[in-house]
Image 1 (cartoon, one colour):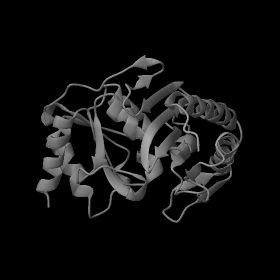
Image 2 (cartoon, helix red, strand yellow; image 1 turned 90 degrees about the horizontal axis):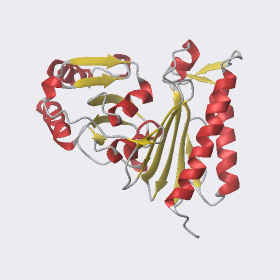
Image 3 (cartoon, rainbow, N blue to C red; image 1 turned 90 degrees about the vertical axis):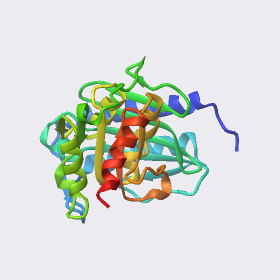
Length: 262
């Protein structure tokens, strides 16, 4: 197999993000069909239809690549190069008209993300991260904040509802240690960590399509994203508790707080 340059992979990733943005913008004018997964989260016909479109594009350009999507059965997931798709991240926000939903796209090489894209269709925001390259937000290089004091940090979490009795104390501990908490940002919040507007992000019980696309974006801006044990995340991670920080020093301080609970 001929390995293409990283910029070629990025080009196709951006084309898919453009396709997703156009599809989602058109979908808001049509009433969706809603189903509920076993975990109680909603999924719409638009989630599935968009994933089919993106899968079709990948299969046309890279038939030998694997595909792992949130809604449909994985195709060749053990391939050297595997695309990871979350067609509408934040489906509940999509259904309720809160414009923090978006599309997450990642390319994995041997199970680790080398490309990550967050695209927010209703605000035209796009974050792009590539391994060993600086992160871009709407075409401009960005960096994380230089916050190094936990008590001065702004914390983000999607919702306390995503936690359970075994890990809610982790959220409460970090809330007590930081200056303020912002809720409901979905994937946008992690883009804003890369942009330096939020210092810490924490979430529980997330799947690989939720967090692997974020890693090149956070790291390329100077930050760090791991599980709560400080371990590197990959395709093999499965469902995980994750934490993202503006810099490794702040990350270490947050992990100290978490590990102190054990």
